[in-house]
Amino acid sequence: MVGYAQVNVLEQSVKPRGKVVQQHLLHLQSMKLPSRTMIEPVADDSGRRRPAKVVEEVEISVTGKVWAYRPKAK
Image (cartoon, rainbow, N blue to C red):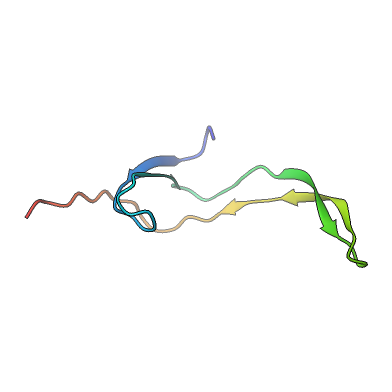
């Protein structure tokens, strides 16, 4: 997203996938993402599934600090 402080990180030897290189997006500031509206089937009181409007709102809270770690050879 444009305008948000983010860092794209490539990591190796990180659980759960071990030696596989993994890509993660780190958010560097708290933010509220734009809401997203979808129509999804939801069970009503009788148990029948009917279409319903679902609004997804995501808020990211960031604390702490970021630093790079590079191990030294023994």
